[in-house]
Length: 270
Image (cartoon, rainbow, N blue to C red; front, side, top):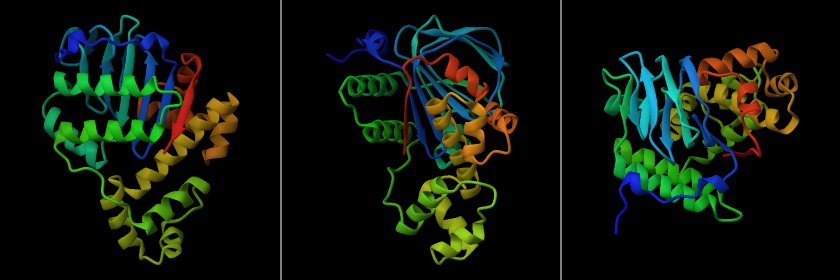
């Protein structure tokens, strides 16, 4: 018998906190915390594994929801009832981000997501997190499939080996001295051709991908060292305040808040 979203049987109390880092996406799974009114540049999907929660946007008073998408740069406030959540942040300039905005957020700051597809997605995620050891690449694929179904996009195609090499180079050396022209020369493309091919293949502009890489490298280092200044310099930010400002603009909170409110964190990079 098919379970409705409000009949989903899950056991997230056994799950630690997890962070997944992908190109143009940042996903947290774990206990949520209440937030005061804030905004962030990333689109956000907020999905509760447990009971419905309350959200208030600039459009009006609190309303009860189970799963929503929140537009970029829109002030909102949450009352989470101490639920377990999946929070997925997506850069609005990505192919997925633009498609989600067009379908769900035209004239809306906050929109509820389809309940059946979302319930199935959460069940699949929960089942895979209870497999030890679980496959972080499979978590990525499950999430990607769900997002593509939401906005009727085709699944990923194989990425050109030249673009794969550029992505690896950015992970190895991601600072402001790495120029687009240098990257293009490494894979024998013109800068214009590299820019076009990268956006088509990866779904995010290459310069925005470079910024995401810096943010995620720094955040991964924060989890390893618990030292925000060291992490910021490691990833190519000029200093800790620069990293803090960039992170807060994208996600609506400071890196220290993420670290403080996350116990038994495990982080994964793709």
